[in-house]
Image (tube, rainbow, N blue to C red):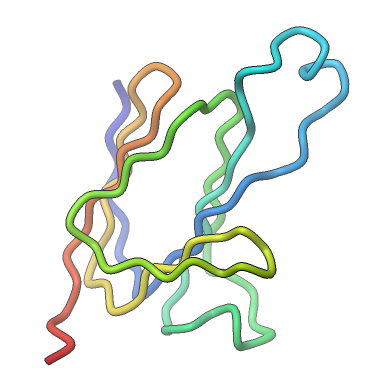
Length: 104
């Protein structure tokens, strides 16, 4: 189990394209990324993330206690108003948990 904590204002979680060799070996797993930003709504700005976390063989991403926006155009998830995010990798699953600032 790997557990990491990052300071970020927002994150984008998305799926990456698989390598053909990996697809032939195993059709169940997908590579994914978590992009960390210092500002909200990163999909509306042309600024790069401060850090990108990449994971090769993931079959499930669990997100707990966060308000999430689903971007239909890119099939990505955006989480805004974060103080921090914790990323735990356990076997082939990711667990995301963070502290969000109150919106109300």
